[in-house]
Image 1: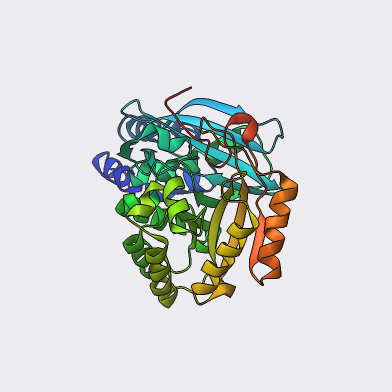
Image 2: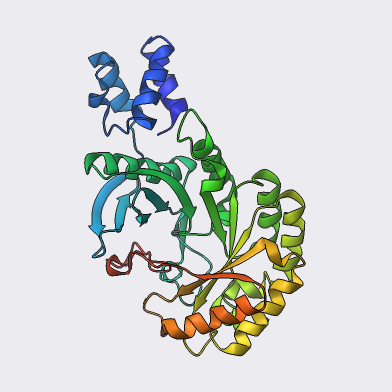
Length: 343
């Protein structure tokens, strides 16, 4: 929803200014799915708004529910008939998180990520990004799902810092107390590591969580897994993080997908320890170890027991490290599996 468009339509319909507050309350606090549900508005206003200011810029194509009952994936159609995927996760009984997309496809072609196989198609607008959150809030209300959706991670399709202006505007809207009212510390933005974008993000949004898709701590190996490393090296990322930490004292998450026989050996763990220590503030970094979720790429996931050994090396060295709880694999909605062109 674009509230500015709603305000203009209401003005054209000669509605008093307080009608906008009624719409805002119904949409962002009551999660209505249509203007017809806002019965405090006169019929003429409901019809005019429905024609000229749709509640959502996306339309549901399909919603899949995971076998675990704690994950859902939606395929959403955009106005140009392109599609994106977004995921709703329930990591605890009352807490819901959504993983949202910021681009159709992705230009960075990480070797283990399904989205990268699509290539880059286009950026999403700020409204299209935010509407994924609104879609899930409406869905939760219709399905009578308990709890509240108030955690958002930009870890879906696309590279957020390559779509900086639209992502920044969407962040401001999500944090607006008169709209989504999501706290900055309940939002995380994940990037493959665009140095200029990292520095800018730190200056603009010092309270929002930053996650770096690291996946290797050695330049040649990372370049094989993440081709962008040839342009944005580990050394450059380290330099950018140093500047980032001038603006933000928030913990930075380092994402690390474990691939059997590729980046999960003890030597890889020791290399990761050395890299994090070299960042200068090891206490401000938290390593998220992720078990690889199957895509068309020729990789195997590290067995969990081996992942725990890898984690222990990091813990013994004084780093903070966890093995992330993976949800959504049964609906191809887990980390690295989102794609909208091969269904």
